[in-house]
Length: 329
Ligand SMILES: [Zn+2]
Image (cartoon, rainbow, N blue to C red):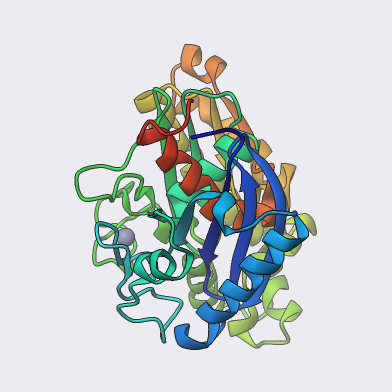
């Protein structure tokens, strides 16, 4: 393959579909977004082809300059056959053979990867993980998942489920989790679970600051309200935040002692909330990991932030080309 070459990527999110055109040496040349909330694949996918042509035109390129495409997909999915089976946040996308769709329409090979893995690959080729051989990216928002790069390679596991750390049990007989287990990490530190926990507890605390902030409409209590109450010094919120931070440190400590990574790169909460999120975790980490491994590891927010959707699919494509030996590492 003559270099440089180019890749195109598609990131299918629950509210938006991100498209990114990139060179294989990690430069994003153009990107676009489509709304993807309550939309049908047959309406959205043809539009992504039109935008692909626009991005290529704008960069002075054509389809023949593309070496591969990549799809970043939420789970559950069938990664072997490149099918989105039943993504939780895309109710109208059922059994969509998305990899075949792009193979047929673009005429180039492509790959299909879960979104947490793509997040890690995006930070690896375009963001905070550049140059690292061992690092872990964590999505930290509604749910929690990880993409793991170990010894310069993406770790997928036998059934492509490696990195499902949101469902690592951190408390036996703990809170119930959507997945069916009890005491999952995500049940304590995922955005949706935190909101539901606070809403349930605050039902009996009508004078609490958070209840007043939402005028008694408990469904309005979410991470944003929680953060505001902590910043305003509400004692209950501060105590809950401290508990969340300690559990985050516990999970991060397990990852650090297991993989001895150079970096933990953290998604949404870390860049949206900043030091209020990161500092208490840093304070607690020495309780949960050996000092020598903590010294090796930097805790940093995502560098790509919201642009991760533009880079995720392209990063998956670059990784596949490298794994197939078509592109040097
Ligand atoms: Zn779970």
